[in-house]
Amino acid sequence: MTKLDIHESWRLHAYADNELDKEERVKMETQLTDDPEARAEVEFWSAQKRAMKDAYDGVLAEPVPGKLQAALKQVSKPAQDSSWRASAIAAALATLVIGGVAGWYAGSQQGGAPQFTIADRALNAHVVYAVEKRHAVEVAADEKEHLQSWLGKRIGSAFKTPDLAVAGFNLLGGRLLAAEDRPAAQLMYEDANKKRITIFMTSNPSHAERAIELASRGKLVACYWFNDKIGLAVAGEITREEAEKIAKLAYDQMEGEES
Amino acid sequence: MDFRTQLAGEIPYLRRFARALCGDGALADDLVQDCIERALLKGHLYDPARPLRAWLYAVLRNIFISGLRREGSHSVVKTIDDLVQGEDAVAPAQEDRLSMVQIGKALEMLPPQHREVIVLVGLEEMSYRDVAEITGVPVGTVMSRLSRARSSLKQILTDRGHTVLRRVK
Image 1 (tube, rainbow over the protein chains, first blue to last red):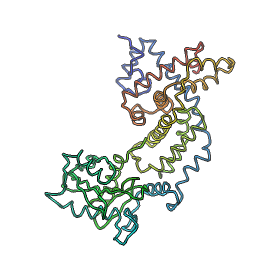
Image 2 (cartoon, each protein chain N blue to C red):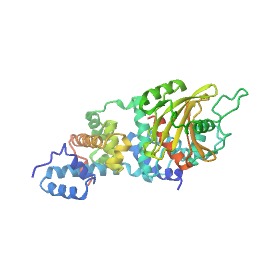
Image 3 (cartoon, rainbow over the protein chains, first blue to last red):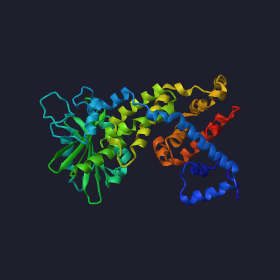
């Protein structure tokens, strides 16, 4: 039987960490009976584990410091807390807030023009364009890179076109739209049953971030959020659960983890 | 159980992980505090189908690693000589306690990417797959980091005359 090279053998580590399946484990145990050096190595690793546990397990029994309990409670404050962070958290935690059309104005708050929420705009644009058979999009998915850089430039913020394939939706393409006097963008996706959803994006002049929220109008649902540059909304004739799922999918890809 | 209640239950584990990662108790709790705040802010990104602890560990280690990048404060190179010198002052009778101090000091000497892997596997008993997800690297990388961390640790702990670890049994 060949001896294990104890410095290279990942199998030995996997054995020590209980990562091998039963068959592999039995094989390794047989091999180890002939290999005292490898056995000693495994024993040394478990001694390392025990030493770490001896050193740090005591922390588990310590009372949780007050400042950590406070950090945990901070969010139980009502959503009108002055900190936008706290309200964003509260909104995110209370599953999804069902917002009416009068919820949040993404547009300029001045002037006499009618005010639309981002949910309104997204749903209006969806209703108009999602039914288009031949001219649903201006730039098709096969020119995704171009579509993305063009629309990103127009709305003033580069974005990543999310892949919604796990939800069954594939990118058809996108188009440039107007949100009153500002450019807006629409990405359109379609599933195997030809059902379409759209993602609407326009700049966020207030730069205030908002967690994901939900608005509905009849059978239409929009799930929207704001980062510091743009507001985004997933729109379609879908259930709230679907809208939430797709929005989270898009959110994860488009916002990412910053660290 | 709501997210916050679950999060509360994980705090002791977050504290243990943080303590082993950064060595210093006060710093560790700052890290946990940041982690709690971040977790509450990003709670909607957590997939309940996955273990909460692994998700929280990922949040915590990301804050830790980005903190290191920002400050560069932990790039101070410690050598085995530093360790041995500090140890000489300790009387032999204290060796049993020494093993605890010792492992902490030895961990501190590992590069953060090796330290987090050996702590997650050895102390937190996370699977290689969970560790890969937490640290954002492939499982193969986890295994090679683990292997290197273990042999460095062995070298640090044995190349000093007395072999503390063997006595822990």
